[in-house]
Length: 425
Image (tube, rainbow, N blue to C red; front, side, top):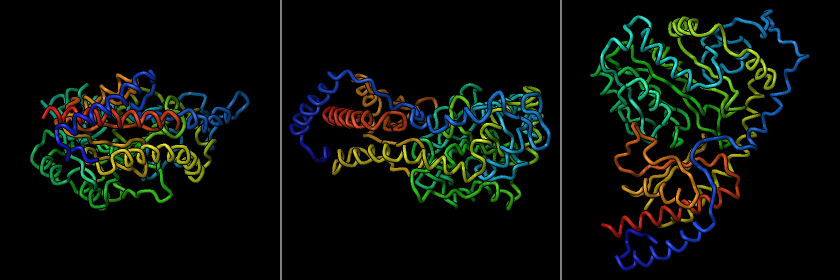
């Protein structure tokens, strides 16, 4: 049944039917959450062995004689750089290892640039109003960082191959106040899009007017595949080195969704020039991050192959959940052209676009029956989705049984909100 083809009387009858389903769900007093991309208990349990690889009897001395129990090694132990170099796509000597959060590192780098400046340039605080480009729908935490520093966020629409590069190129070529762009290049948050080779190449040759423009390449889902034939992302650092633009990208990732979100390891890959400045910035903040945790990860995974084997276990847990959600959406809205949604092959989210003007109502209806979703508008800067249509679903944390109920409740809420909107108009 396509709601768009129904008469007003038919819409009213359908609304009455759907409302009865909604009231039944409300009576169940649900307590379900699909708001954030949290790993499930089953996923966290995959890494429990990590807690056992170092104990009071363990030797914590590195090959080079460094004692991980003591001060030192500002930029991270060599062993973990070797392990994660293939994930970042840079040489081990181009990696800075931070604390447990790559988001925290992004915050730090922007803070450094605000107060000290990009190497060779004035601090951003001395340059007046500055701006960042934000591919949308996008990651709300990126937008929160910009709001914190009072940096203007400019939305750029996403396409199936990544950000609209025509718009990106036009803006950065004409406006020197644009200092950066946030990108989630593989399995983007929330759409699950992987940037095409052409998009990556155009980023590497970006005609930026501001010499202190930087690409914040947040490759959070670099090895978070849901398919045995994963998407392939072109190496941006390789492309930049071909063009002599190796100072453009700052590449971030972490183990937050690999091991433990609260006790992971974060990484930053950059050119030697950028890395030198970043080490200098961090030297004022810390003598070094948690080397024991870095060593723990190295001894647990042993090598890159061990890391990928671990991620296959995550895939085995996550894929049935994503399949359940996308199959339910396909079944519930077959022939009913009131929504569109992504069917990602990796990452942590499914992006749903409902009829314009309905997203906030859908989220409110879900909350009213005990299903918590990410706030409508969160995938846009300042929480403003002009179409009021995008909703991010996070299937990772609930059990399959919980997901089965949650996605049915979501579909009922979408139908009810859409019928209300159509009857209004």
